[in-house]
Length: 284
Image (cartoon, rainbow, N blue to C red; front, side, top):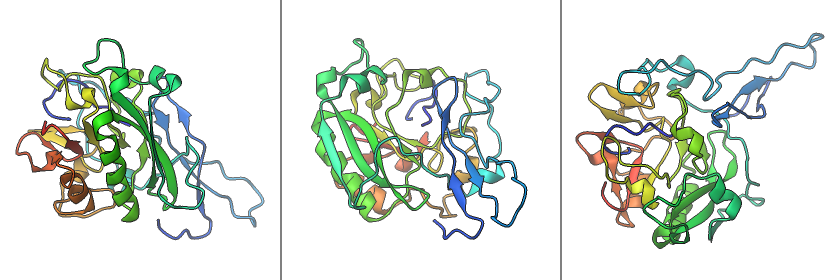
């Protein structure tokens, strides 16, 4: 997941042909950011083994920093203009393909790898750990994880049930790690996440994410923009909302309708900043 740095207001399957593409195991960068690769299988008739060639490695290449601390804004790489990277399973996928969700107190090991600390504006007992089924860009069902405020937990699982029913694709859904808040920007993350203990960008007050009352969905496919700033920094191609691509949130679609039905606000309706990834129970 990308977690964008802390300075600006707001939030912020195609049938395979032979040879088939298969997801390679994901690894971690020093900052803890998952690295996703895809490899091409070598045809059985080939006598020599071709070296695996990664299509894109998320989190591998840090960007030069700007004066404001964000990464340098660059054109979207061709490999990511129509983004469709595979999902690495970190939790068992739903065995029968049906939507499943759980709501529990946060397990100690999950709390330890989250951004929660004693100084956060919400107590750990006021947060809940969710697991929810989602469809990946690879056309397969997966299980994701999320931390939200206890008072919205059941609503959130219902929302993602509607997204699952519609097969709305999500690249990854996981708990944000502390190291991600200070990792060098790479501008290519596409995480779906909720609780992050941090101030609102460019402000001294807490973000709605710090209360577990905001969710970012497919951050790369639905970037944040303010003036010439685009976050993630490589996601400029997705500012063109007239060109529909999988994973994008658009006015009146299943994602906006599902969140609006529980009284949440979409940052895509804001004038500036425009925060296309962001849904919030607080309106901020």
